[in-house]
Structure formats: structure tokens, C-alpha cells
Image (cartoon, rainbow, N blue to C red; front, top):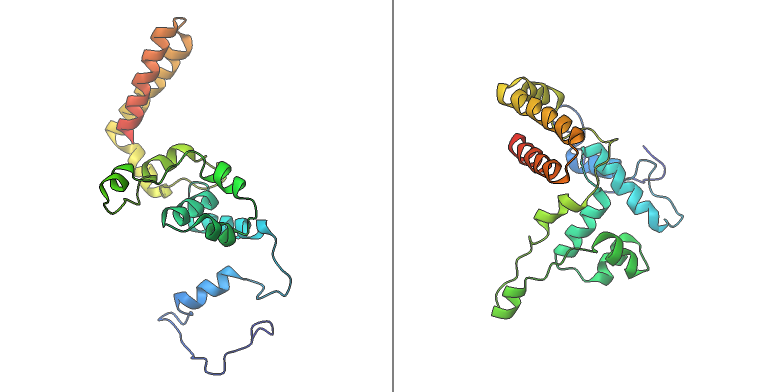
Amino acid sequence: MDEKQPEHPMAERMEGPDGLPPPLCIGSQISSPPGPVDKRRDPTAWGRQALDWAVRAGFFFAPRREILIKAHDSGEAIGQVLKFTGQRNPKVLLHLYLDNMCTIDGAAVFLSMNPRRDLTADFRSATMKRSAQLPQTLPSEAKAELEKQEDYVDLTEELERLGLQSRSVMKRQTADQLKAERRRLYEKRR
């Protein structure tokens, strides 16, 4: 038993089918490995903890930004989102995390309808940066299986050919056409 986490007087002894604690117990163990600490956390502690959770879960994009966008999209006030993240300056939240995303549904406001809450979902991945340290989204077996498929191999070869052509072409217009063709093939391969 951990001295920092005293046992509740009415604690239940619960075990999963493997003899491991159930998921809710695991959540508290993951979120605070050393147990409760008396000192106050600084504003960056939450970001580090969210990043650790995201890396452990295999997220691909900036986890702190994703969490803040979802908190803002849920209709929470900016003040509440600031308290949630331990921030004091709203400019940091508005300019660094929510800068080019608008969650106001203009048609719904004008027509007095219920507003949509999924307005930023399609634009999120375009504005977030990829972290090369995180693993790819597909498991290695699925990726290897995908790379063996004939159409995937054909598209990859075509992309490589277009890449070489676009680098060797001198005319700007021809290079732009080749880049547009590569972009179309990337979308098709996806």
C-alpha cells in the first residue's frame, strides 16, 4: 500500500478477469504515478501530462491543442478553458491554439437554430504539425500488408516518377501541374 494514497475506509477489493485492477483504477494510477503531491503545479505541468497521455495512446497530432479545441468546441467559456489549462493569459490560448478556427455557425445563429459543434473537425488536421517521434498511425503489420497491394505499389512508383520530374523541370507552370498531379495521387493513395 502506498503511504501517499491512504485507502478509503469502505474500499472494495475488485479485480478484473486477469487479476489486474479494472480500467478505472488503472486510470488513477496512470494519471499520477508518484501519487498526490503537496506542492502546486505550474501551468506547463498539465501540458506535459497531456502529452505523455497522448504519446502513450499513440496520438498522431499535437495533443494539447486537440484537447483545447475540443474543450472550446464543447461550448465552454474561455475563462473556464483557461482555468482548465492553468493559463492566465487568454492571448496564448486564442492566438496559439485557436487562432484560425471559428466555431460560430453563422446560419444557425441567423435562423435561430441549434448550432453545429463539428465545424472545426475538418480543418484541425491541416493546421496541426506532425511529430516525427510518434509512431505512424497504422500498425506495422497493416502497413506492410498495404504496401504489398498492387495498386499501392503502382501509385507509389507514379509518385516517385512525378517527384523526379517536378524537380528536373525548369518551367514553373509545368512544375505546378506535376505537383497538382502528385497531390491528386496522394489523395487517391490515402
